[in-house]
Length: 337
Ligand code: SF4
Image (cartoon, rainbow, N blue to C red; front, side):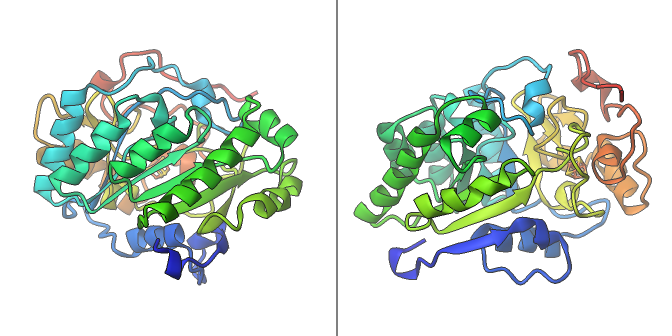
């Protein structure tokens, strides 16, 4: 965001899913556009936005996050596979890319190379969400210089003690310093980069939110509040998300680091993976029978047995994978009680 247009915004993104959302947040508006542009049909056009799991490794263990329960082997994406996904998706019409999914993208040491590659390919908008605690100023400089358009820091405690209790690491001061560095650097080089902070709130952390705002509101474009929710049904101790219709399978393509097209970036065990692109093109995977069937189940409200039912229909059944061949590790599931 250009400095002259900078206007600090605080927004509760929980409200975006109610019909009366009137917020002006950059990320809120993008989410809203994704929802309103979505065509709820079995074979929608290839989406403008993709999200690629560059790594499934995280250096933190936030206590609201299903990452802490993930059984899938941890590693980074193969570089050639990343480039194939990016190139093929661009040829299909994708122009925006998130280079992360449910973990910490800065654990991947090739992230700046990936950002440069996406930019050279022609992507118009590249974004990440990071806890911002793993690296120092030099790495942030590198990813901004490589052409990143948007960076959101995920800071889920508003003071050192609360942060440590939530994230499991004593990195609050380092993260605040990195946020202020990114703010100063983008102004120094006059770079049009969005800088935001998100805070996932829980009853015992909300009291620290004001302190976080006082420390960073002069440096960032917006601070976004979300209530902790059930993480696609994988954290059933938290409330269900405040929506019943999900638009992800219709208007965004997700890729796991194994090269699987999937419906959701929050699906830690690939239960919503439909096809492997080792067997077919990206375009064919988007239009595959398994993906069409999942969309039809969303349209017909027939989700029982899928992870989506646990996410938005309060189901407590054990979710079955959409493609058993893509779930070779032990499938995550916690029995109630
Ligand atoms: S689990 Fe299904 S319903 Fe929930 S966010 Fe993911 S795709 Fe949407």
